[in-house]
Length: 128
Image (cartoon, rainbow, N blue to C red):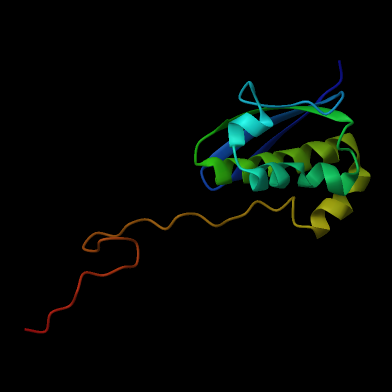
C-alpha cells in the first residue's frame, strides 16, 4: 500500500504524519481528531493544508505526536501534513509555501533567568 510520511515540528512538539489514500479518516495517537484536540480551532488548523490542496476527503491521516501542549501539537501536525502532501505532489509546493505552511515556526519559550521570577520579569527594585 502506498503512503506518504513526514515529520512536522512546532515549539517542543514533534509529529510523525502518515497519509494513505482513503476516505478522510483522521487519527491522532490512536484517537479521532475531535476527541484528541477538543477545540474546533485546532481541528481547523490541522485541516488547512488539505483545504488549500483540495484533497480533504482523499487521504486518511494517522499521526503520532509527542511533546508540548495541544496548540503546539496542532501546529506540528499541520507542518507534517504539508510536507507529506509535497511528497504526494510537488506541484502543491507553491501553494503551501505562499501560505507559510512549509516554514517551521522558530518561536520557542524563552528560558527563565536566575535572579528573576520569570524570563523577563524582574523582582521589584528597592532604592533604600
